[in-house]
Amino acid sequence: MKTLDEQIEYMKSKVAALIRCVSVSGGKDSTACALLALERHGPENLNLVFADTGNEHEQTLEYVHEYMPQFLGIPVQVVRADFTHQIQRKREFVRTKWPEHGVSQYKIDCALAVLQPTGNPFLDLCIWKGRFPSRMAQFCTQELKTLPLVEYQSGLLDAGFLVESWQGIRRDESHNRRNALEREDVGGGLSIYRPIVEWTAQQTVDYVRSKGMKLNPLYSQGLGRVGCMPCINAGKNELLAIAQRFPEHIERIAEWERIVGEAGKRECGGGQTFFTAIGETNETAYAAGNINQKVEWAKTQRGGVKYDLFRCVEHLSSTCSSAYGLCE
Image (cartoon, rainbow, N blue to C red; front, side):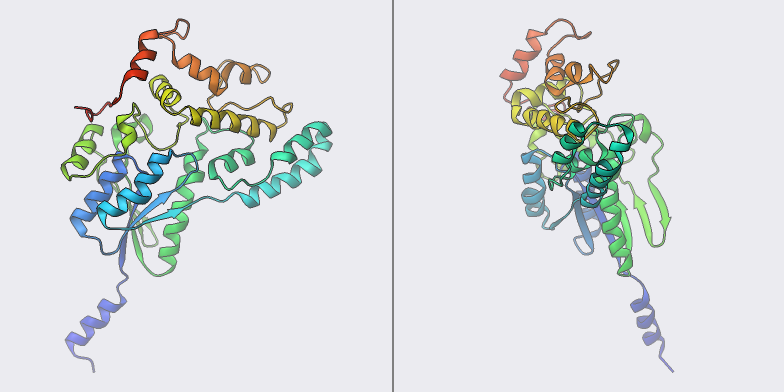
C-alpha cells in the first residue's frame, strides 16, 4: 500500500510536461511573444521555433539565428518545408500527361529543365505550384510556416508532451484576423495562446524596447514588415525601400519569375509574376507586371502615372526610416 506522498509523486510522474512553443519570425510581434513567455514562465520548457521560408533578408536570418538566442539565452529551432516529392510527382505528370494535353515538346523540355528541387522552400513551392502565391491564394503561409510548425509540434505531442502554441497575432493586423481568439483548445494535448491579440503594432514595439531588446534592424530601413523579402502583400513604400536599399533582392525575384514561368505551360521565358498582374491576360501579364515593372510603379504618385521624384529622393537619402519612431 503506497503512502499518500508516494501516490502524489506517482501522479505527478504521469502528468505530461507542458512545452510552450513560440513561433518566431524575426518580426516585432513574435519577438514580443518570446519575451512575454520568458518573462512569465522562464526558460524551462520554452521552445522558440523559426520557419525558414527561404525568402527572408540576411539581416532577419542574422537576427533570428544570432541575436535572439544571445539576448534571450534560448536556442532557436529551425524548421523548413521540403517539396522534393511534390516536384518529383510533377515531373512525372509533365513527362507523361502534358503530351496527351497537346503541350509541345519544347514547353515540356523547358519545364523539365527547371523542375528540380533547389533546396529553397519558397522557390521550390512555386516551382511545384507553377505560380507564385497571391492575396487571393496565399498558400505560402500554410505551406511554408503553418505546416512545418504543426509537424514540429506533432513530434512533441507524439513524444508525450502537452503543447501550448504561442502565436504573435493581433486583431488589428488585417480584416481576416479581426476575430482572432486569445485562447483555443485544439485537442489532443495542443492549445493555442495569442497573448498580444489585443495589442497595437506600436505597443509591441514599445514593449520589446522596454525590455532592452533591439528590434530587427530592417524596421529602421523603411520596412513595415520583415518576414519575406518582399512579401506578396508589400505596398508601394515597402517595395520602393527594398528596391533602393536591397536591389539584389529584386534581381533574385526577377530570376525566380523566369524559373517559375518555365515550370508552367507558357512559352519558355514567358515568366510568372511575383505580384498579381491585375487586369492583364496571360499573354500580357509578365510584360506589364514583372517585378521590375512593379518597382517602376512604386516610384509613381497615386494613380501610377507620374513619377514622384520627392519620394524617390527621400528614400535614397534617408539613413534611418521607421514607422515606429525607431529613428528618434
